[in-house]
Image 1 (cartoon, one colour):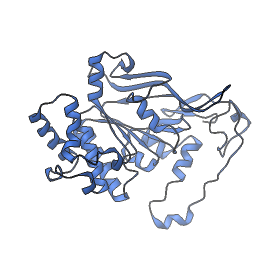
Image 2 (cartoon, rainbow, N blue to C red):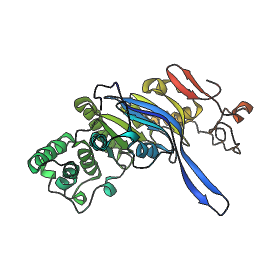
Image 3 (cartoon, rainbow, N blue to C red):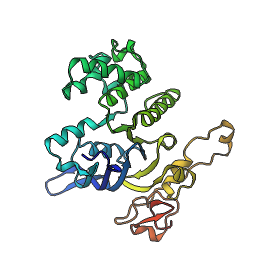
Image 4 (cartoon, helix red, strand yellow):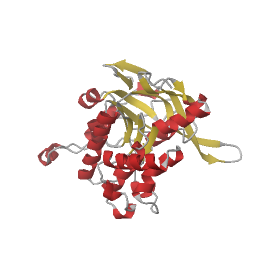
Amino acid sequence: MDSHSPTLLKVENLSKKFLVKKSLFKKEYFKAVDNVSFSIEHNHVLGIVGESGSGKSTIGRLVLKLIEKDEGKIYFEGKDVYKFSAEEEKLFRKETSVVFQDPRTSLNPRFKVFQIVEEPLIVHGFNKKEREKKVVEAVEDAGLDSSFLDRYPSDLSGGQRQRVAIARAVVLKPKLIIADEPTSALDVSVQLQIINLIKRLKKEKGISFLFISHDLNVVGMLSDRILVLYRGKVMEKGDARSILKNPLHPYTKILLESLPPDHPKRRKNLSSIPEIYREEIKGSCVFYSRCPKATEECKKEPAYRITDSREVYCHFV
């Protein structure tokens, strides 16, 4: 793979559907990811934000080839991941990693911390001496010290368990980490610690992240670019600061308005977000049934409009 490629990950027109109902004469599918495209540069963070069920985690699993795509292309450093040789596939597995949402379920409760972090090194054939050194380095990179190596996950707090999960993710020195809601199961104060840890790993280790979250506030703290997802469809994507300062799509605006104010005094002026549910119309904008600004034109699917260095799925941008 070309390590000098300017683009680390490129995804083109990615789609995935799941069978939800099957009868003798008919099959019904749920489209989890619908024609999604994006790219991640080296040493960058792309934040994917949206409600539960919007397809965020499915995108992460597709990128890592944990599930098969239906349509689209995925390129890692310029090469199609579905055309890798056996050697390229092995290298891809070494250069990509994942941090899951809940460390209580992603860490083996029967393994000590040393064994948990060591496991990827065993899979990739490192000798015992190398493994010992790299495990200690990874744990320290994650903000823990060697005294934690002899503990079980049950001996740790939620934040400490997530640091162990991050240590396991960085032990092979990957170029890309998929972070799937890594802060959602943690207390607010611990969330900030994990966010700062990810920022440090990006800066010091040059690791890129695909950061998945339902919390636009958290995504905004970390990301260089943001992709807003609704029912598997990209509503808006572009520079993080630009989107947070001036959201263009009605759904992005709703997500921002739903964030709690940064000071209790401002809660007095907090307006309620209208809940709108219209009958869904086949071939309409995917957000039509809930959009506060929908018109007759929205009964037809919009094209993506490029404006202000952003792509927006809306008729009226």
